[in-house]
Length: 247
Image (cartoon, rainbow, N blue to C red; front, side, top):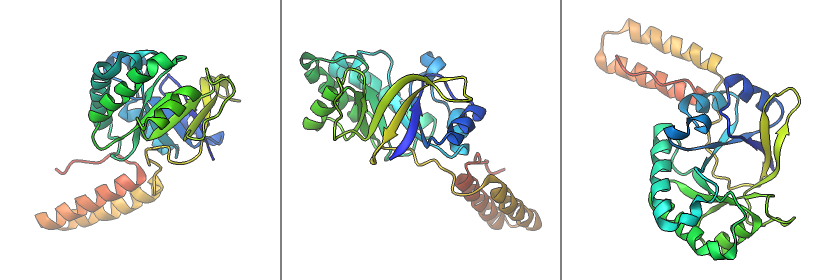
């Protein structure tokens, strides 16, 4: 089991480090377009979360009952989610969750299923997940409408779904030393995380990059310089350092 948080407000580098230091291993954040800038996940925030050593869960939500709009809403939201995922470099194979953030009733289930399937058609290469109550998770799992499930305790009436990959068990809490409202979660595998934890310490990467830079300076061969540059960028990727364009 892993501990994680979700929140609407973007995380700064300092806050991300504080959350990681409190024992949390993943962050759930909003993959939404520019018009929702106040809660939008950006490349800068991805870098901050990555530098703190945490993983990311992407969730798309513009309004609480949006999935009740059915297939037409799902097509629009799926395309917007895909555009954002590509913009900030979300790796293929990871999941995008779509939020059913209200007490959905059986009369809504057909529309929610249609919404999820339509959204899935617009996010090729990404897995589809749903956030919602026990009943929503159970019903969408039964219908095989998606492959990842994030259950909230809200509207679940004390029930826990065995299908849940992530479980949100507390809303609006404050962690010691962190002046920021967070929701608390735990996960059980197959979450669809972004695998963003750096494989190399930045300080070690910089030493290797400096060594490769010396080799680049010492040769006038374009082929050799291109290879030194490629290797340096591989090191940057391993350490979560921004890639540099070849001069």
